[in-house]
Image (cartoon, rainbow, N blue to C red; front, side, top):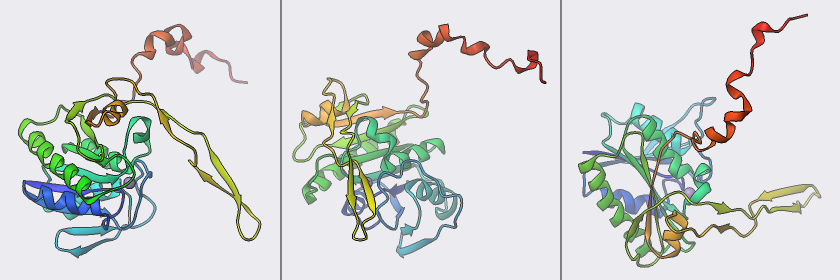
Length: 257
Ligand code: MN
């Protein structure tokens, strides 16, 4: 059993250390993670500069790239065999609802899924990250990893796990919820009088609908959302049928002058 562990908070984050240690009970663990925090880099892949991987201690590779780079390089370059599982986390902060489109943590699991390796992402919701909260999330990760390995995930599917702080009441299989963004950009001036901006300073809300990841966390349950990479909105086909989108772009019958 070989497990590749990564994150987007960086290799020195407490979440990845406790996760790697706990998953070590299931098999051999290799860590390939960014050398610094790379939260919210999404599914970014480095194509225009070289990547360096430094083995800072046995089985711990610090990489000057994104979480996606780490999974890609880990599987294709650093590991001597294909991993049985990729686990990304434990992230400091939830990855819920629409936020997952920005998430480096979730994107790392997506990359593994694209490469045909079972994967899940795990994040600690809330904003104070007590050691016992990481320990609780790591214990759940071990339990889930065992199931994933024993039962096998459905094809093209990754799991996005969020753990509430404190003592969770249990776990729920959820769907992706919806964020209500604050739409705030903070505008200030630097010491030389030049304007700068800071995105995301506002209060974030969410639609508290039963069955969603947000709702589960709000009710103090661990949320497990199965995700796939097919972003097609099948429900929109009917509404778009009348647009004639199937019959556009007939450039051959147009005269060119
Ligand atoms: Mn992060």
